[in-house]
Amino acid sequence: MEKEKIILDVDTGSDDAVAIVCAMLSDEIDLLGITTVGGNVELKNTTDNTLRVVEWCGRQDEVPVYMGTELSIAATLVPWGIQGMTLPHREAGGESEFSGIHPDHLPIPAPTMKTQDKRAAIWLVEKLLSMPDHSVTLVPVGPQTNMALAIRSDDRILKKIKRVVMMGGSHNVYYPTQGAEFNVWADPEAVEIVLTSGLDVTMVSLDATSDALLSKEQAAAIRAIGTKPASLVATMIEQRLGGAEGSVDYENKSVGAALHDPLAVCAVVHPEVLTDVWDTSCHIDLGRGMAYGETVLGRNYMLIEGPDGEPQNLPVNCHYARRADSEFFYNWVYDILIKDRDSRTV
Ligand code: RIB
Ligand code: CA
Image (cartoon, rainbow, N blue to C red; front, side, top):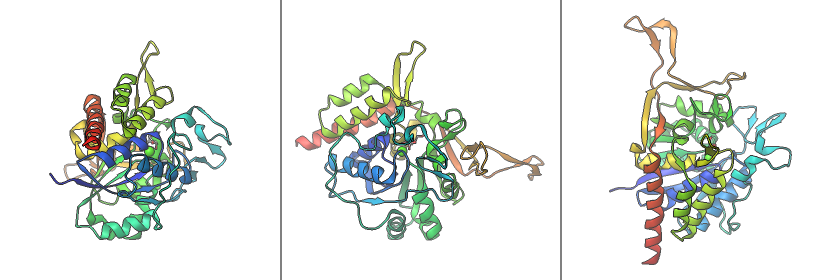
């Protein structure tokens, strides 16, 4: 079966690291390259962390990394905060509960590999224009500044893109504001550019990723695989169990941690992992008020009557994933790591 050609756009962070491992090692995916963006941590660190992961898995000669942008398209937000205010994990020079989940430097060796000379948005345009029509799936799992810049720079790339499977958005579950999800909130205008581009967009939201928790026991089983990639994945799960991404039951017992980004990668090759998908209109609130960056689903024009006299619905432009199959997701991650181990021992 032909592999899915994808480009992964990351703000590496701990769950991005697991997404990179799965995309590199999966025998169902042809990872054309990785682009980096500021987000969980600053651009220099998201880029360094991305290089660390690629080299840790021994893919430095196969997977090129292109540095993208630090700042949002238009938002007053910068990835690590709002002017005059900072996100919890970016207290002025201090550490916070969030720093443990997305450390400036992942706990693996500093890279010797370098980024490619070309910057992300430039490479995206050139690479996509060189590809057959509708052949490449874009998988942004951080703020979507690079994708938006590429689309605005040369819309000829749109026909080269098969679809977009993004990690982002929220409806019932949200962080860091009472209605927004971080990747969208960090660059709302960028996501709206993607959502209004006419591309086929699947939104793997916080609702879905919060449904696919990975547990301490599953992390231990992954660590027992015994390879370097497996040890990194296990560590990334374990460090999220205790932090803001961890979930506890009513007895305050850990029931697992959400790893948002690898679920989006899984959904590219196994859409069946998403068990409740709502085809709806989806837009991002760009007003500079309290709802700035919120995901607005399923609205219609109340004052405009459609052909049947009903309020005119906004066009459907998104497949919004609300639920996910955690067992399927875990088995997908585990199988990738087992196959990788067996391929290393032959
Ligand atoms: O809201 C979750 C998203 O924000 C994930 O992509 C995580 O890595 C952070 O970027
Ligand atoms: Ca991310």
